[in-house]
Image (cartoon, rainbow, N blue to C red):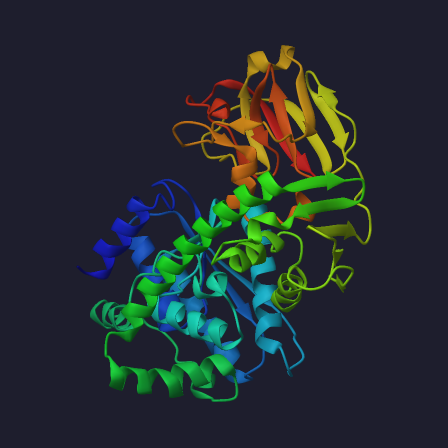
Length: 438
């Protein structure tokens, strides 16, 4: 199967984006991103190109930018560039990554585009998995990069590097070679240039095997998270300043430490501290461990979890009826009447409702344990609590999650997911436009 066929199949099978959705393609000028840009244009998607010039490699950085810009001008692709000045030194790659993704997100919103598309491929996935394992990551790190993460999609994630290079050569796609990728200065480069060749001698298909392993690790991570959530719900009791977790479930189980580790992930982000708390759960009464957000200490049959800074309670329920701006703790909800334009796509911060909802009372409130939603584009219902687990929303942030409810039906987990009841089918239909603003 050639790259075009596999790309089309991946997009369709995983519902990455619809035919008319507009895309912001992150383009460095290298073979991967240039091949992706060419392929998406061939498939007919409305695309825009975004390039970041860090000016870290002198003239080469400017030549990369010029190559992408020339290609876009020749193929009528809108081109955008951001000049970022980053001081070199330790952590420069992570700083660069954070800076470019922040810009991609802002540019996508400014241009009212649907998705940010990157050219990460199967070799990148294998590199990421090995890098994470070297740093001591668990299943979450072994899962590698997600095919889709909010508005960022990686449609080449199942594609080996050599097939992308072959596609570029067959289609005369011009690209630039980044000589810094050959340097062994950075950890990822050492994995790519020193470790990969050795692994290829052991098994030439190791990249495919690591890709398959990362997929299974991702599913295992989700499965354990769901079981841990169930154990948390059945064994914890909320207190005035945190939680009290009954530790009886630890007895007689060969995997209770793993479950406890996952349960703590929503309370403590640092794996090393989570391991300390797991050990604490089996230690003598009275011992304590201080985490980022909570202090954990061992009681006789329970783990007491006390908030270091008590979370502010959500604002009381707010009733929104008709057009206007309704302020709540997380921001403001702006409601206007609008003629629905199919080019303005709903997203996590923007939904549309039939105009008849203007006469109804819409309730903005904190989510509750019994809430459920019929997610947009999905069949059946899903508990909001399960959805938050699936989205890996940290427990300290869950208390800030709000929902929009009307007549007992959850229309929107605000800023996260809309319900099927917000679907507007016809263009030129009069609607209520609901937009979250900061």
